[in-house]
Image (cartoon, rainbow, N blue to C red; front, side):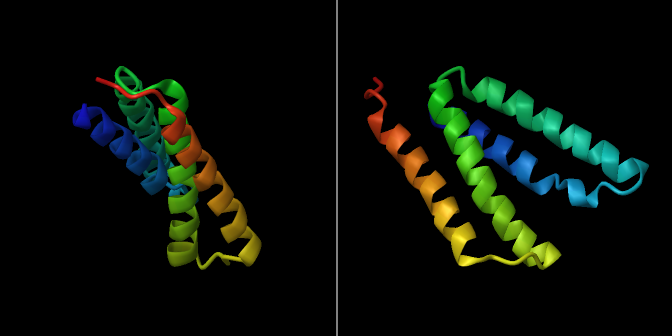
Length: 105
């Protein structure tokens, strides 16, 4: 079961680290496409054992959070109070979905 969670984390990593802001030129654009394909393939394998609503919520929520951090660190984008509030709301929603799922054997 843990391997499916690792696949989900790898999918998130492929999505977040493959920033479209790096995609100027042919080679970086190909890297973005490959990263997104890898992310899709990994999440497809992850949802074999993780409920799709949980997997997608974590993928989206953690992706938004990490992308916000990457944007601030690499691209000097601002992190405002409202960005933090709405990101926290997304994470809270993801945690709620996770906690509501039935226990798995």
